[in-house]
Image 1 (cartoon, each protein chain N blue to C red):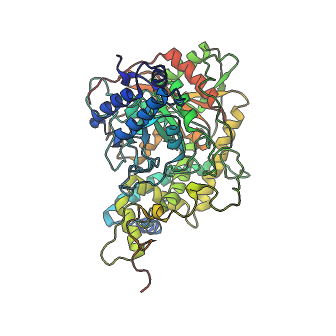
Image 2 (cartoon, rainbow over the protein chains, first blue to last red):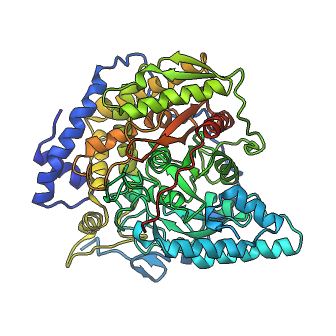
Image 3 (cartoon, rainbow over the protein chains, first blue to last red):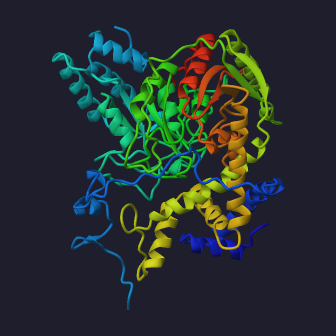
Length: 100
Length: 493
């Protein structure tokens, strides 16, 4: 399978990465080179094979049903959460106007 | 007094504990070596004060007769993928430039708790995507090694290229690395040092900038197997903050080291004899078999039939996970924001990510987005995850015949910076021997074997059963003792 320039533009838009014409032109053959190469996976008979979901057998744990059980991931840290925001206003993340 | 920068983890720890020198003297010596090595570009930021403060704390404990910790007095380099409280953490990207974590990653905290200090944050391939350390926003890292008779800057490998360069150049006794598809082992092999990726889940991923969460594992890089054992013991351990963390005790790997391999079987996978593998690499592999036989092991031929499909499967799975993980960089919560005049929210996302991600990151996010998109998911992603199951089953069957596997770490020695960066596929082939163990979550280590005819280091890889880091380290120790690798790059920086 190979991708066209229009398809790459659509993928870039899905991935929310703005791409100019020159960048798209460069990306199309690169992506097709990679996609051609992974095509060989189609040779492998995988009927009856389960896709891997966990690489090492491990059970999903539940934490204690207690508010703020782990201090580092607990609430009450608004200033820490906002400390690296490009725009923080009134204790919130600032974003451009969404609703006209 | 001996030059303290020639000492490794164990020698520094024992020397500080024994009073041969102070932790402060060690930190000062390495801080000076780091400051003198700007030409390597191994560090993105240096933190000499962190190293000195940790050293002073260790010296004060010693004066009071307290326990100094298993890494007491050892200053290390921290790959800039680990969140460090109050110290910029970038993943070598522009999009995280200036990001200052308000918390400490579990692995780095474990190291500080064990008495280590930080020399600085080490350069890497951007978001750990690369095999040559040429995708960093903060510039290429140079290996301290040069090809005999040439002056071209060589690749330190990637993605942990700052780590490998710093340890090989003796400007850090050890460093943290992370390995998603070979990013500890390949740079270790390129620079003549040791590095081990433990079983998936041994080291907490909490506070490690995520690339491909089902593959990412942290591990140590140092100049000896013993030093790796000590440091891995300090880094590993159960962490309730990481849902994939293994709830198992950390074995006493350092105390358990033994180079006696009597009764052990070492498997040689026939599928790793690939076209295009360098003759000298094959020779080092033969030599490795001899060394392990000499240590008492029996060498057996094994087959890992799906080896050739591991790398293409990896280049679907890892980008797929990356495209999802990197969705968080949106210009809202942290990092770069690019807000063109009059732009709305969606335009801001797209502009921010266009400005903040490098080419290789964009390439992988696009591949990942494509293979996960409606209509292609089953053909690419599900098929790759099925092949991942087959790769893991190959190893499970092999464990019926052997206790560990010996293979080359890389198909070639290091190459000059700029020589492979035009072709993504050729670059990806660097990790052809490293990726299968990553897909199966297995512990794997690279140990230096010899110099090739060009004077460049070659590494040997040992892959072990799940949770058997001890078996991997022991086979590594047997090779280390017989290889007697003591070559050092000549200082040019």
